[in-house]
Amino acid sequence: MLCDSCGYRNIDNAKKCMGCGAALKPKMSGGELSAMLNEMSDRSDPLTASRFDKIMGLVFFSLSLINLIVSIFFSSQPKIGVIPIVFAIFGGVNARYPKVIWAMNKMRLRFYTNADDLTPNDLWAISRRISYYFILIIIIGLTVISLLV
Image (cartoon, rainbow, N blue to C red; front, side):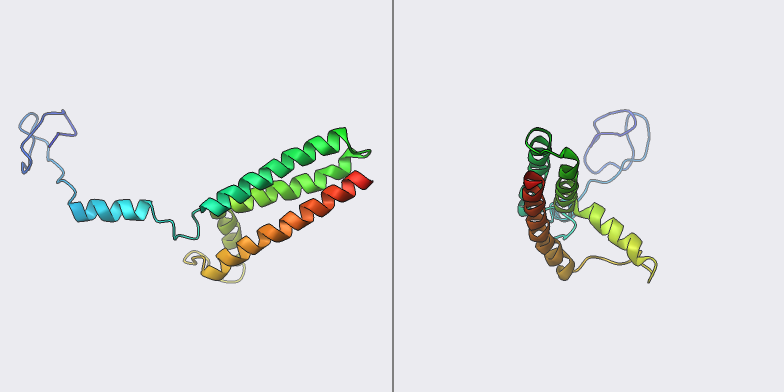
């Protein structure tokens, strides 16, 4: 066991460092280490972006870039193209950063209840995914409208 203070290598079950006398912290047991790693890699948490969420975020951010190029070069009124860009950026943030969306939701809920101990449920995660499709339809529709104007 290495001493945190001086770096001296002590025997594994030592309570104090042989080099400087500082108290040594006990090693983590295998069960504690396994539990910590499982908690860190828990993908069932609704506040962790899944692979699908990351792909949708990439799609939305790509659509914002495409809309920017389309509105600058192909639209007669480029200011109209700002609206689908804003929707695409919102969709990307919604998909890639669920913790941000949940924090905004908790801030809204604080007006009605004690939101400090609230956690998202499955309905929240499902409604977030459904919102991807609505935002995608809105972006495509607004892009077509901006090209026709």
